[in-house]
Length: 387
Image (tube, rainbow, N blue to C red):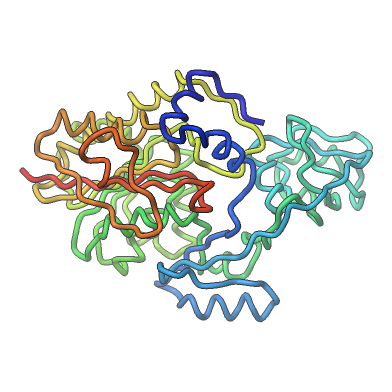
């Protein structure tokens, strides 16, 4: 269930016009493909595909990106409501909704009489049943332990194999990442020997992709303001085998030009916090137009810092997983008005749409729309510093 105020719905109508309801309905379900990026520094996509298929898992190569493979998403299935239930938080519910097993940190509460081996239903905070499974812990253990497998899911609304428990994931051969997100590093086009900055790096998906595209021969510095997120990213990079190729710093990237004034970057990725209105599937979401305006004012500050740390001739790629003009074209256009040295370079992705036509530069931006492209909603812009 989506709870957006009238002003936010009107902002969405600026993008989707009479199709706004179609867009909103598309957010409730996942796309038909679950994408994985193959860690090409360790293995070829064909080897991963062969390994999956040898275990009966359907998997295919993407038509365009050689490092991208995908698994067809199955569903929707009908999940029954049993007497014994486990209530989980929003993000855990959305994972179980897609077939992931339930781990104890996501549990909010549960039926007190649940014992290991019981059949249970997993439900979201809003009462939506997202999966059925077998309890791997007593209820008291789930609530108190806060770690480990709580419920082994046997049926979910939609399903893909539990990727994070596969040998390929554990060996660091794959990274779950949406197709539009993979295009960000491709559009950035990093080269060996360059200094590449990822300003809002955690959880590390784009950072790892940059390492893989440059075969570890670029100087990559990843920034994030959260110690917890940096720790998670460090674990992820270690799993992928990329730790030696990335320098990580805790910092507020809006002030890199002050705190790291020595940086003269060749390329920068700015993937700032946003309202995530393009993320799917959503079981429930509550946003207001004020959230959009606050995010927009926050996002442009990262680009202002880029203007001071980027070399002449350098490239910045700005991307978000949201869909409003205010957080996408609006941010970029305002930045271009402030910084005369920057010009947009067309983002050439054949399977995307152009930006919303609010200026003469809108043709240069790329957008992915859930109900059109069968992906999350996404925005990508590429800017070059000319002076």
